[in-house]
Amino acid sequence: MSSPLLKRYDDDTSHIDTGDTAWILVSAALVFIMSPGIGYFYSGMARSKNAVSLVFLCMIAMSVVSVQWMIWGYSLALSDTATNPFIGNLTYGLLLNVGDKAHANAPTIPGAVYAIFQCMFAALTPALALGGAAERIRILPTIIFCFVWTTIVYDPIAYWSWAPNGWMYKMGSLDYAGGTPVHINSGFAALAFAIVLGKRHGYGQEKFEPHNYLNIILGTALLWFGWFGFNGGSGVASNGRAGVAFAVTHIAACMGGLAWSLVAYFRNGKKFSSFHFCSGAVAGLVAITPASGYVAPWAALVFGAVAGVACHFAVDFKEKFRFDDALDVFAVHGVGGLVGNLLTGIFASKGVAALNGSDIDGGWIDHHWKQFGYQLASSCAGAGWAFFVSALILVIFNYIPGLHLRIDEEGEISGTDMTEMGEHGYRYATKEPSLHGGSTHSISGLEEGNRGGAGVGAGFTDHDSSSKSTVANGNEKPAISAGV
Image 1 (cartoon, one colour):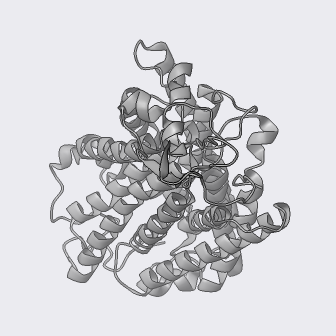
Image 2 (tube, one colour):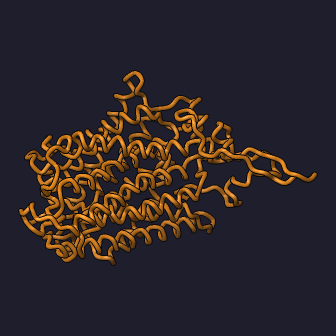
Image 3 (tube, helix red, strand yellow):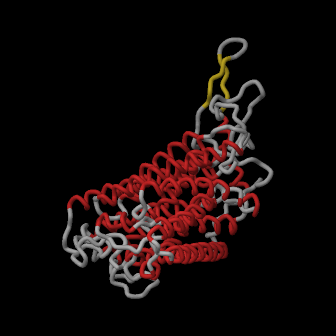
C-alpha cells in the first residue's frame, strides 16, 4: 500500500513542483497565525487580569518550540532514515542535512519547506495544552517545560503517526493532519496540567467567566483561517485532494458551531451565545483534522455535528469529576480529537485519497472493518502517552527548585499579567455624566480586575448599583460557561 498522505512520484525525491512548494509555504504561514489565534481565544475566555499573559504564553511557546525543532525536534519527530518504530534519529539535527532534497513524505517540495511547515504544528501543540493550566502558571518554568515536553511527548507521538517507520503509520492508522499528535496530545496534556497543578483559588466559590467575547470571536476567526493551511496543506501538494481538505474543514466548522449553539440554546434558557458558537466551530475543526484528506464533503456534516454535541457535553466532565480545566481544552481538543479519529475509521474513503494517487483501504464505508480498530488503538496510545508522561514531567518539575509551575496564591489573586509580567491588558478610565453637570471619572472594571479586585465574574467590577463601567460586558445577559 502506498503512502496515505502522498505518493505521486513514488521514490523520486528529486522532482520539485513549484506550485506545491508555494502552497506549502503559504500553508505554513497560515498555521503560524493559529498561535496568536489561540492566544486571543484563550485570553477572551479568561479573566481580564490574565489576558496578556495568555497571549504571551502562546507566542513564547511558539518561539521555544521553533528553536527546539531546529536543534533536534524535526529529526526526532519526522526522520525518514530512522528504522525503529518509536523515535527518529539525529540525521536532521540543527537542520544541517535539510535543504532542496525532498522528504519521503513530501516528494514534490524541498525538505526545508516541509520542515518549516511541520514546525508550525509542533509550535502550536503545547500552546493548546497550556489552556488547562490557565490563570495559575508561572512563565519561566513554562518556557523550560515547553522545550522538554515537545521533546519527550510531542516528538514521539508525531513520529509514530507520520514518520515512514512509525508504528502507527505502518499499522495503517490514518491521521491526515494531527488528530493524535496535536489534538488528543494537547487535550490529555491539559488534563494532566489541571490535575497536577490543582484548582484555581476560589474554584467552586466564584464564577470564572469569559471577560471579552470579542477576543473569543477574533481568536476563533484566526484559528478558522489558519486551519485552512493546517488541513489543506497536510497533503503537501496543491491538487484536488487539498481542495477537498479545504472544503471539509470549513463545512465541519460551520456544522460544529451550529450543533453546539443549538444544544446550548435549549440548555441555557433559549439564549444564543457567541461563545457557544465559537466553541462548537473549534470542536468541528478539531474533529475533521485527522479525516480532512480522507472523507467526502457530506461526511464533514457528521463530523461537525457529532463533535459539536459530544464536546459540549464533555465540558460537564470537569464539574462531575472536579478538575479545573480552565479553558476546556480536554473537552474540545481531547474529546474532539477522539471523535475525529474514530469517525475517520468509519468514513475514510478510497475515492478521496485517490485524488492525488494515494491508495488506502478506506474505512467502514469501503467495508474495511479493521480501520476502526486501528484508529482506536492509535487514539488510546496517544492519549495514554500524553497524559501520563505529561503528568510525570509536571511532578518532576515541582521537585526541582525554581521550576514549580504553580503560581502562589497572592500572585494568582493579583493576576498573572501583573505578577509575572508587570503589564496591564486594559489600562484606561471611562468618563460618565454627573447628575450635577460635568463628568466624573471611574476606573475601568477591566483595569480593576487586573489590580486583583474580586470583581464580578471574569474580572469585572460593579462600582455601585447606578454606575457600571461601560466596558463591563455591555449587556444584561446572564453569565454562561462553555458547557451550558
